[in-house]
Length: 197
Image 1: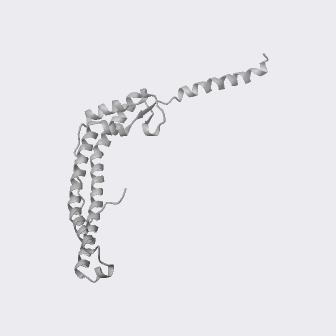
Image 2: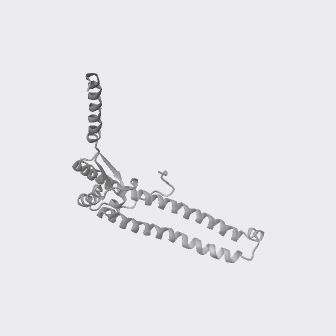
Image 3: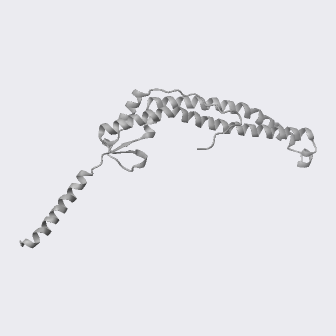
């Protein structure tokens, strides 16, 4: 080997060693979790789900109590006006007054339906706030213990080795840290609506 090729060989060998060492030094520890499963299977998530179903049923009852008389009056009006022309209906002030009252009640029912939907969303958000805070702390602990640099939700991954899924461990810790939480119905004042998020 000629001496003049030696510096080129040293440079090539150095580059090869650096190239092989770079991936080893840059190895990233990745963990996977399934947030939807964690919430659904944790004790606190199941508690919130049960309470939300009860609150939803209560709200449905309130709405139905308003809708039933509206539907009954609508059926009566339809039966009374079935054989009348629009002109004949307009010529009867008693029918027009009932139709206007029915329309006003229907608008009130729609406003109530929208308010109840917003209350349900606000109730869910309020109940989940302490859960998400506890979950964040648990996830930080698991990431630190496992020496991970990245934690990805399962919904963003096509395939992952089950060995890097920490969902079971997170559920167990969340159950210990926050087995239950308050789930109280948020009530908005009538006429007040929250902006959409």
